[in-house]
Image (cartoon, rainbow, N blue to C red; front, side, top):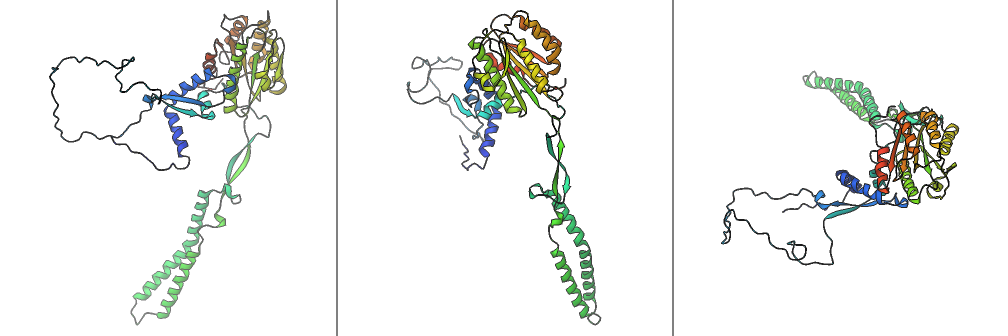
Length: 429
C-alpha cells in the first residue's frame, strides 16, 4: 500500500475552501445530525454551534495501490484436513462478545467508528434553515425615497481610483497609441525606403549628404514613437454610479403567542422554541424584516422581544383580542400596499365561548386579504377544539396563504417549522 501525503503549508483561505467542500460532500449526514440537535436543544442555546459525528465508513477516501501487473506463478500449500467442497466451522471467539478480535478488554483508548467535528454558529444555522423562505414575498412600491440603490451608469473621464475601469482604460490607451504612432510609422517607413533606395545607387550617383539626413530623420522618428506614453491621464475611464430608486421587499412578521392559563409551561416552552426558530430564520436571511411581538390572554398587547420570550403571564383566553391588535397595528404602521405582512400564531386551541367565530370573521374579512401568509401552530396532544375547526374554514377560503399544523411533542417543532416555511416552486399569488 502506498500513501501520498501533502505536507505543504496551506495557502491563505485554503482550509476554509476545503471545509466548505467537506460540508457540501457530506451534507446529507450533517443535515440529519443538525435536525436531531435542534429537537433536543433548550430555548437558551439554539444559537450555538454543534458537534457532528459521521460514521467512518461514510467518509472513506480512495487510495492508490499497486496492481498485480505482469505474469505471476502462485504455489498454494495443501492440507490434510479438508477436501474441495467441505464446509469450515466458524472459529469460536474469546470473551463474552463472541468476536474473534485480538487482545482483551481495556479501559483506555477510543474507537474509530465515527469522525467528529464541530460546526460553527453560522454553519449550524445555515443547515437549520436550508431550503426555507418566506412564502409569497412580493416587491412592493417604495416606502420612502430614501430607499435607493447605487447602480452603474456608464463611464466618465473623472472619478476616484477605486472606481477605475482597467479594461476600458487600457482599451483607450491602446487606441490612442495606434492613432498617435500611425502617421509617424508611415513617415518612418518612407524614410527607411528612401534610405534603402539611396544606398542601392551606384557610388558615383549616391548622395552622402542625403543619406546622413535620412538616417537622422529615421532616428528622430524612432524616438518620437518611443516617446508616445503607454497610458495617459486622458485614457483613464471610471465607472459612474447613479442613485436609482428600488422596489421595496420589506416585510413584517407578527408573532402571536397565547400565554393564558390553559397553556401549560410545557406548551409555552414549545411555543417559545418555535418562535425562536422563526426569529433566527428571519434574522439570518431577511435583513429588512421587522418583528412585532404580541402576547395575549383575555387581552392582547405588543411587547418587546425580551418580554415575549421570557416574561411570565397568565389569565383567560380571548384569541380575537390578539387579531384585533394585529389589525390595528397594520392600519397604523404597515400599510399593505407597501409591506409584505406575515403572521405566525401559537396556541393550545382553547378559546372563550363563541370567540372562535369572531376570530374566523376577523381573518376572512379583514386580516387575510391584507396578508401574504398566516401560519397557525396548535400545541396540544388532545383532540382539536373549536378554534382549529374555525381556522379550517379560513384555510378553505385561502388555501395558498393560510397554513395550520399541530405539535404534540417538542421533537416535532423543527419538522413543523420546515413544513410551514419550505421553499415554494413559485412565488406567484
